[in-house]
Length: 436
Image 1 (cartoon, helix red, strand yellow):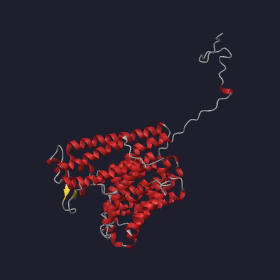
Image 2 (image 1 turned 90 degrees about the vertical axis):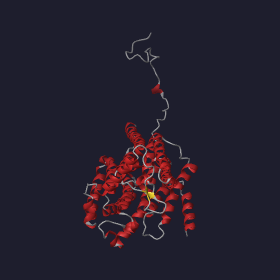
Image 3 (image 1 turned 90 degrees about the horizontal axis):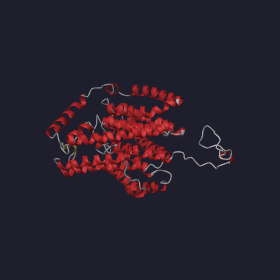
Image 4 (image 1 turned 180 degrees about the vertical axis):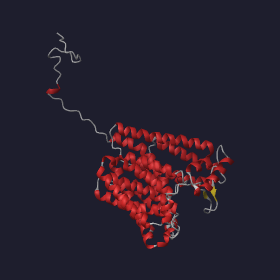
């Protein structure tokens, strides 16, 4: 069955490659496999881990060797160099080989995210690609909705824990899904696709609020707000969006557990204090170069990366002050490139909608990094989407230049003839003084 499914899926991927960007189709599959790879109550869930890994490899193979989309760009190259440095730090950690393996998987996800972005062939291709991502996230949303409806015990503790997924994991997986769905709902030209996006986004909003994940909720809010900014010039669509959010939000708040909804209003960091304290302890033990790799022996056989519940704390603990400076320089350069993309789009009167989507999703991911380290572990959607948005910062400028209107030379007519010489006036003399 697995072999047959693989043959059929690869055949469909090849058959539709002319109309659908195969990279975006595989990214859509990643959106399904990544959250399911942590669903420990699904029998044989380990297979989804291999499927997620295979998606990363397939993106690189198709993009680099078949679509020639591996050309490095400034922002993506700087981010990739930082990821390689972060991986190499495991050499001086307590277990170099397992550390390099785990961090190497993250570098693979970084490369696949960049290649997927560089493989976007046009603005229309990006729009269709977001539709594919919508279908992938919609499939996972329907699986999640079925669990919510048929298994009331999934939220018996007050927070949604479907298939054994951690509530915070549910929130952080659904957040990028709802941001991508918002881009389809707000920007797509097809009304059926927009309505489908609103419906899928409503399911994802139900999942995020039911999970009680504050990081996921704030991440989703930042991304949706950024995507909605271009709607100011479209008051009808903006009013419709506000009405949908109002009525759907009211229904969701009535349906979910009060414990989950009340938790979203708690702005304290008590649940992070213990892990952040551990991070500071690791940093003070080796403040200059860090620990190299902070392993969690109890996570799984062979060890796993210990989650400091903050990417910034994780970088500080594992790479020290040197790594923090490198990370800060990389981040500043990427944000500068994003700002320059916005300026370029405004000055050249280009379509800025997908610029808002790209920068908004990137900002939401970086904000979520304050509360979770999983973004740099490569096992979730955020790990793929952060390099994807950084790659789009480079690629969108190229697409804008590529699709800029070209002025076609007009055929000269009698009206274009310069009569200044014939009537005795200098062509450049604005006083029209006689020349002879």
